[in-house]
Length: 204
Image (cartoon, one colour):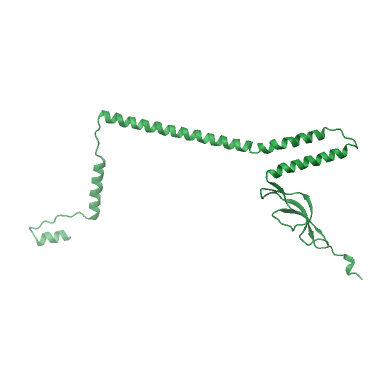
């Protein structure tokens, strides 16, 4: 026997009215909101046409914005390609006179008497080339006589030496360079090692 039966049995004239619980109240509110959402709005033909026109204008503006952005993207991409393509234009332009001098030197017919002049001309071209590269921020890496530094030097061999401290660069096979402080190419060097031991020194 449930509570409702007990109450009706004890009070014959009493009628119990069910009260909606928390869950039932939520269901009622959700149903009410759904009903409100389904309410329709009546528009006149002029208002409807105006809304259609606004939607068409919004779509046209969106398409124009997309087209403008695509044109901007293509323009930026082209500018980047031009920068990469012509980034060294100034440097190459300054190197052209050096190339001309080298071609003139190579086209010369040399004899023993002109060998000294040719060698002097090559030194001048080399000096001119170094001057142009130096103006662009290129500088040689200090090597011979300096302590070995793996940041700037690449050791290709260790030579025993009694004249230099161990770990000192004693010869340079290929010059290294830095470009505006950044290592462009390390120097290939030989490093001083411990002096060689005379095998016969211990014999008596």
